[in-house]
Structures are given as structure tokens and as C-alpha cells.
Image (cartoon, rainbow, N blue to C red):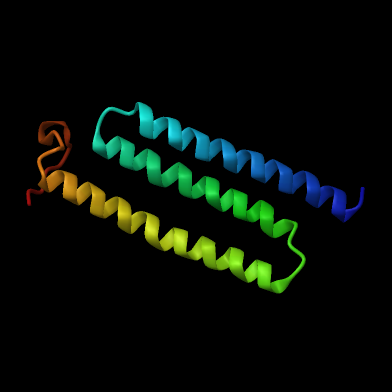
Length: 109
């Protein structure tokens, strides 16, 4: 088996796995009942799914410019997803949309 064939199979597997994680994240956003669980579904599996897709793309990339772009996209995703999830959770908590009795620790405002 040549490197090209192995890279094709591995790249395809990463792309399919990443798409599956993104699909699971979308289903979680639709099906989960409250803001905090939806936020979790929107950030964690979606970010991992995108990183898997980017890894699959990076395996088949031929140029340094493409790899640089993939690395920049991955970096920005890793930097922005946790910050946006934190801000959504904080805003919903302060707006009273979170059931404070369901929380394990409530540190207040």
C-alpha cells in the first residue's frame, strides 16, 4: 500500500468522523432542554468535529499555504469557542434563564 492510499483512507475517515461529531452537536443543540446543555453541545463536539475535518484536509494538502490556513482556522476555533460559550453561559445566568437550584455550585453574580 502506498502513502497516497493510506492518506486517502485516513483522510476520509477523519472527514466522516468530524462530520459525525458536527451532526451530533447539531442534534444536541436542538434536543437539549436548557441553555447550559445546549451551549455545551454547541461548543465541545462541534469544535472537535471541526478539528477532525481540518486534520483530514491537512493530510491531503499539498502546499504550505494550505497547511498554514488550516492551522490558522484551527487556532481561531480553539480560541473563540470557549470564550463565546463562557459569554453565553454568563449572560443566560445573569438574565435568570438558568435554574440555580439545578447547579451544583452557585457562586452568585
